[in-house]
Amino acid sequence: MSKTKITVIGSNMMDLITNINRMPRLGETIEAPDFDLGFGGKGANQAVAAAKIGSEVVMLSKVGDGLFGREVIKNFKSFGIDTEYVEVVKNTTSGVAPIFVDKDGNNRILIVKGANAHLKPADIDRAKDKILGSDFILLQLEIPLETVYHAIDFGVENEIPVILNPAPAAELDFKYVKKASIFIPNETELETITKMPVDSLENIKKAAESLLTQELEKIIVTMGEKGSLLVSKDITELVPAYQIEPKDTTGAGDAFIGSFANFYAETKDILKAMEMANKYAALSTLNTGTQKSFYSREDFEKYFE
Image (cartoon, rainbow, N blue to C red; front, side):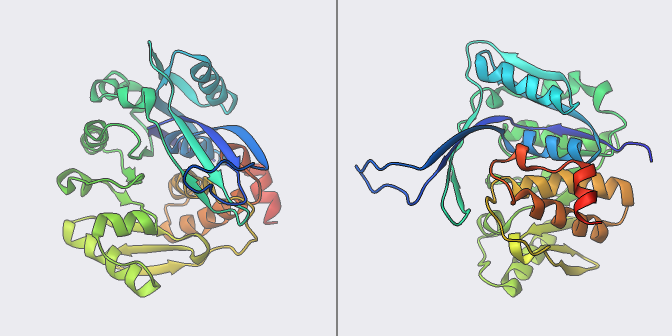
């Protein structure tokens, strides 16, 4: 089977992960049991998931000129990701994400964009020859919106389907967003974007279906232990999650999206790709951290033998 090719145009972050028993109150200092440093950022996470599950991956991103930036590039290369267009921005810090994980595996995340804010539309045009021939372009919202919209138009012009993950949720211009082939929010992002309740499966369906009036083609809502929901004008279907006892859910959504792009490019069957991505995302919750918790193709297949 020939390798699928995925281009990720997006962010990278250094994750500063603190395990906590509880969040401190205002003005309070408490001891936390554990700290870890990891590679993250939604774009980088999705790129690594796609690479580890078997895709050839091209990454477009920006890093700072300090230690973190050098380590991010080295990390991408360790997964075989093409880093020709992961570029250094002088006198700028790399993006960072302080993450707080409680004892139930739930997380709270802050992000500081840093060099990610310098990824511009012109960077996409310069990388055109590298991007052409991709099965998918993956996009998120940790880079400037003008760059996201330009990437969507670039995909349309060059007949490359675009998957847009609207995270973190932002005010969006659907004139551009409707051109994406697949729109993948989680429940929280869906609620923010539609301003509709998502407190039940029925309400999640209604909120997702409301996006069809914006001319979106396909919407997939990722819902953690409830699975993933496909909504289009032809179908509304729930794909159940693979049930597992999670240790850390950080990065599970990115594991889903990166692996989904690979599985969909391989199988051309969206529901099958969602089922496989649900399993891949579930396995990512068995270990702490983001990218280092993602399974290789070999280990993924071995687990489900």
